[in-house]
Image (cartoon, rainbow over the protein chains, first blue to last red):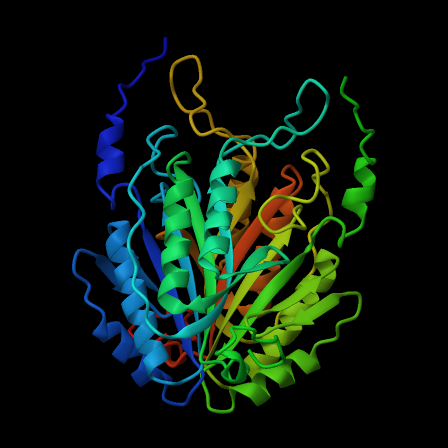
Length: 234
Length: 234
């Protein structure tokens, strides 16, 4: 005889950002001998209002509502940009799976639907590489009656997110495994967070990885046109 | 009337690493005024034998057989470590989806089964955060007859990969969205690549993101024991 447990109501998991595992891990790398001052200065500049925060030796974790996460990311990275030093920042967004590998939430707890968080322009030009992952969706070899692959439903949300970056003018096309973005730091972050939450309207567990290149010497000559040519130094 | 195309044989997609989209994007960030010399020196040290390679302003892409990718990653990062400078390296592994967001390969082209690539110890102690993503698998709310969530089949490969890092002694437990790894740089890379290929035995599209912290000032006192305590500076 088996016993069945009554699951907690879905609202309990989706209304509380921390219970839903909403947050980001941020690794700030400043290519200067004064990196400690720049990093700590940037982390101290941003208000942790509404967020849970843990700073470690590999990354800093912030958990909380998507709007607060976006504000924090924008404040920290614009403070790094304001230092004038070349820096790279890697951002790992996650929602819908508070745990490590296996989700602590039961399947079907989500999705969590929110309005797209609002960002702000920072005046800092950046180049970025972006990946967006809806997890636990689709099947690898689903075929329709004619034997052609069936596109999973969440792909339309991904295409809409890509289209949004094209309309904003920050999309510079696809490279291996990533989409290249260029433009205002705040706009890039806003669009990436918007895409993450948009796909999250139909998928419980969505992660996104973004690598930002800030104040690169290879950007200086091209900031005005936004046509930075890739070159040797990162 | 619809026409059905005869799909190319699966072998064509899975035997050629580049057709299968096997490769990595690497962002090397050296926290020193001499970052350009260290990064270019490391990239020039590693042999590109057997690999396709493109260096950009945000990351360097290498494509090719998993064994060559692991060798290249190990050579580049150990050269960075040998500089003595504090650095962070972000590694984005991908296989089974050569395209940007929508896979260029048809569903069911894979998986690609290979033996776990062999790494080498480098003598450099690192701390790392690791995420592993099987994509296009499972369904969000599959329930068994008793109403309990059904675990997707690929999760057993993930659990085996986690167990392997525990047996090797590099697993330091879970943090938000990631597994923390500590130990020899070459062993960490070998295990992460092994896990990526192991999950790839049953899933076509598998990505993995790894952030390495090398020569951190907060590690110095702890390298002997491997018990680095997280602190403020990255």
